[in-house]
Length: 352
Ligand SMILES: NC(=O)c1ccc[n+]([C@@H]2O[C@H](COP(=O)([O-])OP(=O)(O)OC[C@H]3O[C@@H](n4cnc5c(N)ncnc54)[C@H](O)[C@@H]3O)[C@@H](O)[C@H]2O)c1
Image (cartoon, rainbow, N blue to C red; front, side):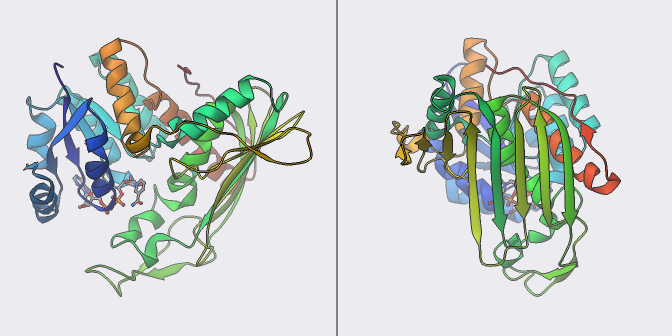
């Protein structure tokens, strides 16, 4: 690639707007084209942002593009990522990597054979706040890490998202949709997970779309919507994570890392900025200052970091390998809840 990587975006829905608007902050790539199985959506995004609207097949096969940015719903991820690789392009995908661990493994093996990169959201764990948190932990300011407590509790996308039903189908649910934020954050701060247990409930079996052209449509909920997980890390640290689509009117998202000498309170892992605070025995929580990257504190940073890594011929950080580990952990929690036993997590990731 000479100059900015030419990006083709697949899936022109809600999050596509965030990525296209945020892309101006990055000189490593330029979004050139977009595609959607719903042609009208691709055309609308294309005209709004001066992109070329293409069919999905043409975009995946195009030799004028270097990278595919996959922003489709989870059940389309494997096909789009596979299509991008078959078309000879690097690919960065929204989370979860796929909806099945074997499919994810196959895609990563194929990328490896082809010498292509797979990157996977979330990239919020690369924010300046989380980088500063890594330094606090590495300096030993909280002693030896004992573990983490994390929670992300929302009311469910049926109140605000025009296609919210996909969040409640196989491949959705809060553990696969919200879980990746804190599973990625914990793994990147404290290392890989080794075992998972979980309990899960589906208190609201049917919902109604509240907004968009399909408003009023009722749908059944196929997945657990309130999940509590207890996790053992390979380091011996222990973590808990609760995720919910049942917490009506609420938005609660937080994590604390606990150590032998103190604790670290992290900002919302669904955002790029927020307060980082440390407690190390002095009686008061103290704010930890960190320098912001300004406009680059946005979704797209993980893609940017991947493209810089391609140019520098080094591994990238929001990697497919990490995405696979997070997917394996999230599905292990759900399997544990179904089968009533602890499930081992076997995948690992390198930690550049
Ligand atoms: N909405 C959010 O706030 C948000 C935040 C972070 C991440 N994400 C992730 O981003 C992804 C997309 O979410 P969204 O909210 O933008 O969904 P959305 O429904 O608004 O948009 C998805 C788009 O993909 C298109 N599509 C579906 N199947 C396709 C296929 N096979 N090929 C091409 N296009 C296809 C749909 O027509 C739709 O326009 C999901 O993985 C989600 O987890 C969403």
